[in-house]
Length: 217
Image (cartoon, rainbow, N blue to C red; front, side):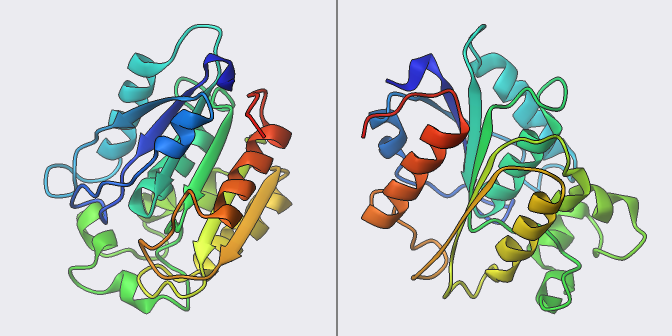
């Protein structure tokens, strides 16, 4: 089970703190879960966090075995970047599972993302702005097109990260040719339970259909 695959788990916390999430569900699927660490926004600005994840992935992967990446909230954002942009080259990550992930600081329906002191502001070291290279680089859809399978899950009651972040990203990824599974479910931010039957079934279905990983039914 799991075929010896490694799942790199990326914690949330708005890029400025470390939040813990119960992820033993993935271990029960036979995946070897590695908890990644990265510099927080108070320690370094973007793209230092992606650089750190690449280093973590290089240390965690096993030759000849697939590596997957997953994360929640800010960790979902970073997982998407690693999955779409690759560890050493685009396409070398088998799949991405992103839960309630922020993906676009310039979304018209999310003005709070562009407010002074927002997590995006702290991540970039300046306010997100159109035409700004760092803003473009940290926007997930900018890097769509390598075909990496993606699972996106969001709670409809999330007031911290609007669920429209997931829906808009799903549309962009599908347009770019990515296999995408989307689940919009009940709950709020940081209330998603990987063991909840609907979420567990969604993750199992995604892994079974979009990766070479064998998971128990």
